[in-house]
Image (tube, rainbow, N blue to C red):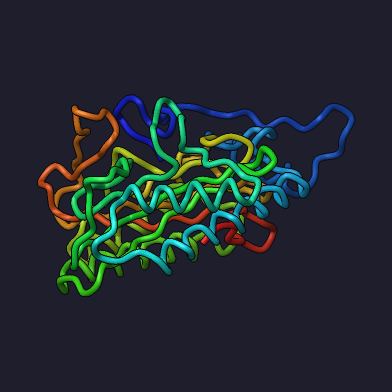
Length: 298
């Protein structure tokens, strides 16, 4: 995740960055090389070879993703009114370490917990604690990243506590639809980050909601946060070209009111909607293949 605030879970945006794609000396250009070089020659943002994961690396990320998905399944089985967000954090920690993995959030830039728990108007980076008790009607995002054998996998889910209001339920549902629309845009390689954001923002706006602009998805796999920055709004044909072998998250943050947010000055982490209306987010990690994306975390 990316933010204008510091500390943050991702680097600042660099919209003007142009990565250079090079064909190794003495090697004949492949079809992928030719496509990327064509876009580069026309001034588009293209990846470097360092962003292309090997089959072995992708398998490592996939295995981390299995644990990450299982963690969020476990949370779904246990979460209910009356529990504290600190309990959720303990579940995440215990399951992660018992499976030989490490929670990436714990200690990252000083973050004190193993996951983020963001309730109602909290957009992201909510810090679990023993005093925050879930109530009937709350909506909560649980976001965790798992490191297994040096590979990172990242996902988040929304959970509805009991029965919530129709408007909050719609927000959760539309946020999920936005994630799936982003996935559909990636049904073939050589699309642009802007294509993803454009489709997501259109769907959110058609449903009367807004898209947070100060945070975004990101590359992932060998590090917690890598290029590209995946905005959830934007123009088609802009942003980085997505090619086979790239691993990245799509994680739209959809607000009921304004898209603007602020950071809680008391903890320096918690991001809240400016008007303090509810927010919802879902996140998957994807790998782009020759035939479109594969989901590595659910």
